Length: 328
Image (cartoon, rainbow, N blue to C red):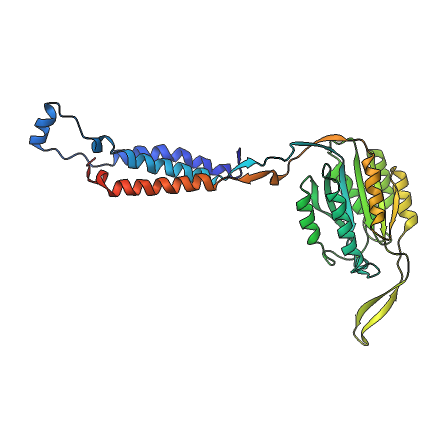
């Protein structure tokens, strides 16, 4: 059990202070000479008098429970492993404008997203992260065992998120940065692109040399059928028309990047190319990893909140009844 917003718990220190203040501000009891004489002869106070502080106690307990609810207590979900044996994998996905080419249906990017999603789903014991790149690279999802989160983020990936271009070297360097502090013995980058490196500040071969020195394998995947294809474009003069386009993938560069790091180059003409990567990564050495996914916990605040509200209702009912007529 832990609290998502523990700072609310500081308010618990005010609960006893509120109780002390409430007792001190009660008016003094009204004395009556005849009753005083009766009490002096040893008459014991009734049950209502002895229970006169119960409503206040219920109110204070209710406030404490509501404060605990505000702190959002959470419990670990059953059936989720605290540790897992697997590989740390960063997927670098090209989202440049050419990934909208329709030689794959509906286009290259959508096919690549499906392949990446299948890849993560097929590796439940591995931490997987996502780097997106075009003119520059950025991390969309850090390394995580929460593959449902990765799937949701993949669904939101679309063309035009960043300036156009293909910065392969920057994508590799960003992925290596995410793997730098990884405790895993097996660390992998899977890079999917459909083009030629033309942007970025880091040369792809320099980044590949960095990966090799760090012991990170890089599997490169060239996305594209390799054949000319036609794409519908909106021309300001001729209107919508079919345009013949060439599929260009720098296979020589991607092969050299993979070879320098002990990885392998694949041509993703269909989903089978990435399935081959599954088999290759399965042979890698497993290493223990800690799972620190926020979705391992479920909120439990409704229970103290409901208990607090019930106690407030009970306190109101008692205070509105016989106990209300008992003086301080």
